[in-house]
Image (cartoon, rainbow, N blue to C red; front, top):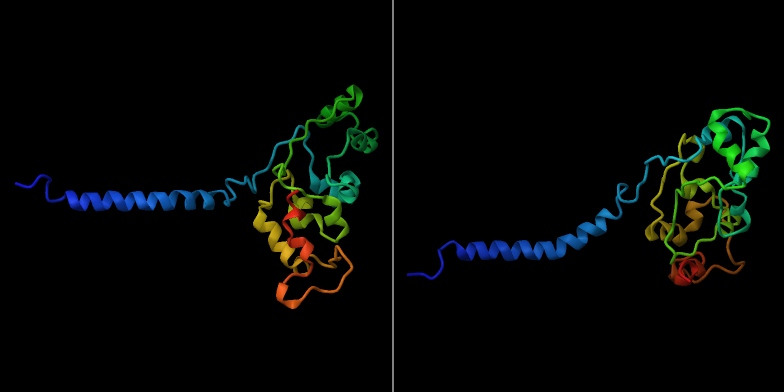
Length: 205
């Protein structure tokens, strides 16, 4: 008489196959998941403490990105506009509107508006806005078509792959690309316009 039923070998093979698939499939599945718009919270409008419509300010009023986010041109962080910048206009325009009560309270109490960050890179990533802006990178390359957003959302995941794709051939992504260093093109075999863009320390310091 057999110690195990006749189907036990088949069951063992199925179990071992499923275990092998799980060992390989779970890590692969997680790697795929973290690249999805769902995990990166892309295309989902982010609520802010003030109902700020970029469409109105950019399209109707003609306000440039750097007027409010002036830090992008001269520092690593683009920053959010101070309440004083907002009140520069809204002390005269819509100065009694309930929609702007939070702005007025912030101004008179000298407490910053608690804006919610849309993009928050990990601490191990070094990103300098001023380097990119002065090199000719337009805001929309990373932030999407913000001027047509009622509420801002993450248009790009800003993954390492996204950054490297641009760093490999910036002239294909950025119109009027300005080289970070005024030097001859590196040897053709390197495949890079500027080797400093592909250095690990360019983004990780």
